[in-house]
Amino acid sequence: MKHTIISPKEPAGTGWVKMPPIPQWITMGFDGVAFQHIESGLCAISAVEVAQAEPGAEHIGPEYHISISKRGQRCTMQEAKWVLKQFNLEDAEEDNHVPDGKVRNFWRPVADRLSGYQCPCKDSEPAIREDGGDYVWRGIPK
Image (cartoon, rainbow, N blue to C red; front, top):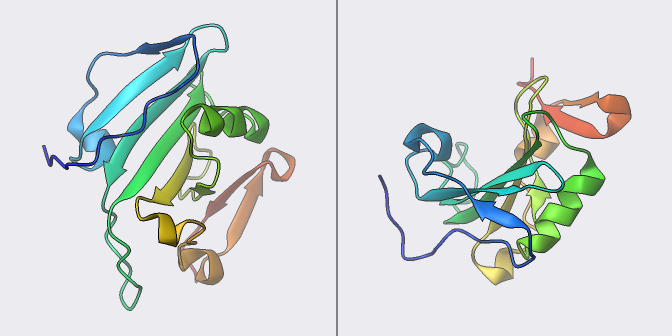
């Protein structure tokens, strides 16, 4: 496992339960921790990861990554925003690359000066909308 000196974010609100350790492949080998909010059924996996930059893209360093689901299925954007607030990551950007994905993925650079950074894929990859536009994932350009 790749350890960092930066810890994954943890929820500040009440009702969250820390889950058993998660497999390394889920967080690209980086430290990660899972939490479940029993009352709402929302689950979050929190990690600090260094995503491989696309060729020619700026390397922005480690990022907070939060994956959110609800009872093993996709949650709504409204529910995801509530979870992001619980983890103090309201400014994280959603970036999904899985059709019919069961989780919503949010990223935020650890460096505060890079808050609001958007992956270049958002300009070059087509946006596919599901759930009436509530869920967007990006495919590979043709």
